[in-house]
Length: 79
Image (cartoon, rainbow, N blue to C red; front, side, top):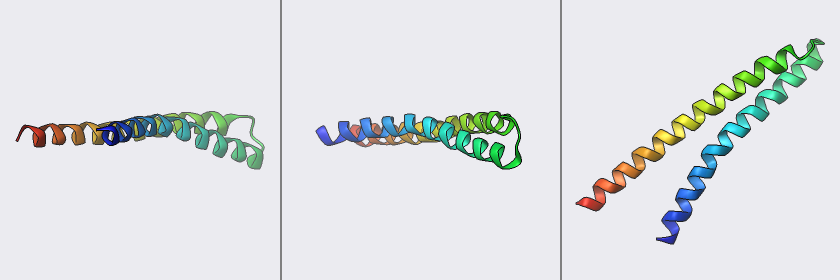
C-alpha cells in the first residue's frame, strides 16, 4: 500500500519536472545561441516557447501513460 502511494507521488512529481526541465533547457540553448550569433534575445525567446511546448508535450505523454496504468490496475482489481 505504502509503496504504491510512493510510486504515485513520484510519477506525479516527475510529470511536473518535465515542464520545468523543458523550459530550462530551452532557455539555455537560446541563451548560448544568442551569445554565439550575437543576436539580442531572439533565440532565447524562440527556444523558451519551444521549451514550454516540449515540456507540456512530455507532461501530456506521462499523464496519458499514468492514466492508462491506473485504468489497467482498476480492471485487474475488479477481476
